[in-house]
Image (spheres, rainbow, N blue to C red):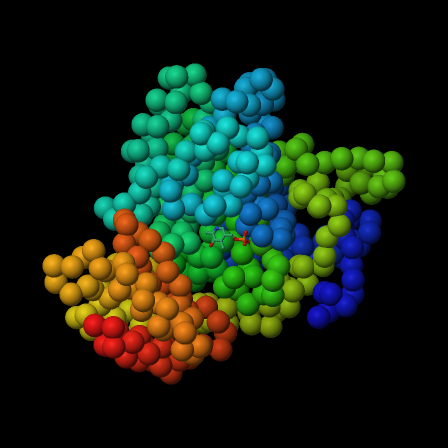
Length: 385
Ligand SMILES: *Cc1c(COP(=O)(O)O)cnc(C)c1O
């Protein structure tokens, strides 16, 4: 309410020094909470910036990476640029490629399966890059995900980062959902290898108690962003900017105007504190863990992917010898459960199987809600079977 009511329009530093300075400070705090390498702090060549969404975050870094490689390889190289990610990567990457003029066939979404729990295989990536380089293409961008949308798969950042480095590619890490959990020491290892990344993104508006919108992006080399996105019209000129003494976040993003979003994050960090936020995450993961236990105890169901954070992927097993009906059965179960109006669960498809997804992520969710949801699932399953 404060952020909206103050109506700050902080596009360049001079229009609201506080909005810019607080954003730098708060994102440095959060970078420390996540134990990101110092290169991502605003005190060096990098820094954090609040974008509206993860989609905008991946777009701006893709543009920065594209222009960086084109400065080296020449403008005509655009049609040869290749982007890599797993087939579990959020469609925001494809959209960024569309906007960025990348040949759609060269946005390579490498196949994953249950053998790696739907994580991107470094060996497969290495082979693709070698083949593409040999045929004259230019690998330039790798997007890894920590906590994929379908099943919260975690790509192995350390191994992928090494490959990106040796191929001189931009390495972006999309941790839109699961990044929040990495403020907890026991989950921080999921982003081990972020040291190798050029950019890292997490949505504070997903699982970090911050109202929409607040998507946090850190980069190691802010100049790459600025070189792609800055403009300098007469009507925005001012002493502070021209003396190069300040950050003008307009050059790190697509729009010019920007809200005072760091105030929301500042409020959350000051109100809950790091420990409060860690407890918040722990509690959700514990609730999801409870739910997973309930599913595992019922022989009519199976958990279909490892539960890592607060999402449980599961399905009702079809009666014997009728695997074909499994998808319809689970589709019907989803509809039956959601039509009660008491609970809302979502679905995905993994390895051709229709899967139900139970996510804990709302501040008011308690154990009794999880138990009640499970009861509804069991009742509807019995009726269907
Ligand atoms: C939610 C999500 C996105 C898209 O988020 P927006 O902020 O709505 O663009 C992208 N990637 C992952 C991994 C997500 O969880």
